Picture 1 (cartoon, each protein chain N blue to C red):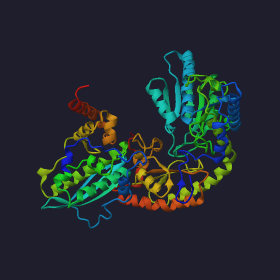
Picture 2 (cartoon, rainbow over the protein chains, first blue to last red; picture 1 turned 135 degrees about the vertical axis):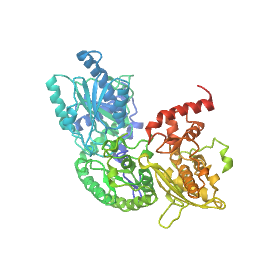
Picture 3 (cartoon, rainbow over the protein chains, first blue to last red; picture 1 turned 30 degrees about the horizontal axis):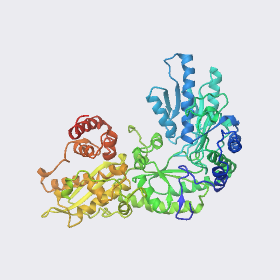
Picture 4 (cartoon, one colour; picture 1 turned 30 degrees about the vertical axis):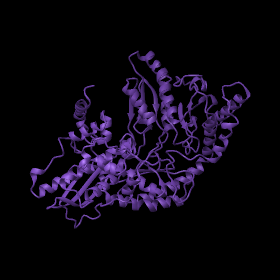
Length: 418
Length: 220
């Protein structure tokens, strides 16, 4: 996308443009190295070699072994493989220990991405799992201790995202991992396992699985300047999963289907590039993020969603009272600023953001929320441009709006949640 | 406007093709809203109506001036809290009600959301529900006028019984939705938003959907 003042893309949490260097790495694998990695002839083995190299790269970047990486079609598939994959074998373990009427228990929380949360709710509805959703505090921070306290003898999995896609809050995965390991040592059991969705974190945080103490970790390409439709699941040695896509037995039988060779090569390259720059880029974006937050909170009746410090360097999420997010987003769109909103009107489900509601915020606050997610191309001039164009937009929409709520409506207070 | 009442199956979905989410007309009314109430002080309205709640995501307020002799609506001002569709639909409604010397109260009462979306060149399917509040606010303003001039016998409390107390959705609205092809609760909610602010009415809504489906399409 061409970049100028009227083209300020601040929706990097939705997806990122692809890095030119990533594209360059991928191109030969469409036309020159076109073999099927499962074929034994030279073109096939060339493709196979490229996939192995990519696997080595990804493994090294997260301090894992090559045989611990399974390539998938993206974040949603990795999350689904982690959860569904654990249930069958973990569930059998629970039944053999506690009796055949006992179903496996999973612990998660209300802030998860739908790829985790919706799946867990469906499994709960079907009676396949017992589900505990731990509550976060008003900034979306989960306490490792609160989660660990929910572990029972039939708990097979704890799934907590590394950083939230809507409000950018960073969760204490490492602390949680330590508590889970301690629990397993005490009981002598293989379970519970710890899964984390690190899709939003991958560009900015340390992905070392030994430091994080995770057993399963979801990654994808489309949020890190890599290709869309490709991702990976880290599966710690010794963790047994059942395959969800059955066929030719690729990816050690865990994910059948001819590998997306250009995608996998591009994904590994993208992860390499963002991880190499992550500290420098995080420091740069944190400054811009805080500048944007400070500038936008000067607008009357506004409030930051998520934690001020335990926050991804690229995430800004603010609610503006008395206006509706989709309208504000489209007025910004007309000014060349591209962001997203937690308003019901912008969602296909007609429900406002479940994340903002889970913080104990009102429906009104969710409807009036705007998310700006910064990225590589974001400059100080971009931030200043947003700070300049948004206040009159909010003012204009408030002029059209018949609503004039007090600030106390930001929090749902004692109001019953839906 | 009156003749439109007959053709129940107006195509109200976006006729712009897939290129743009909103039609050019919607965008025009959204970016340049017509007749919105800039300043209430000093504006003497003959009737005021309001529907919706900010929790549900849409609130509309309508002010009208009525010529007592001709019963034409000579001016309509509005304010809307809502998305692009909601703002554009209220804006378009204000134009439709006041153009050609203004609709009479009876004409204005018959204005349907479908008529507004038609003039907007359609709305994306999942946005049609955003346009259903404007005409309700208008009818509420007309009732307010009739009350003020003492013609209480002419007040119509919507076309039927109110089912959703928050959004003031009646059995008639549900009937219309079913007539337009919504045959499940989800589809009726897509069109009317019924129950999103007042979930307690949902069992009754489901019963009504069954009733109207049988009435118009025969038993399953």
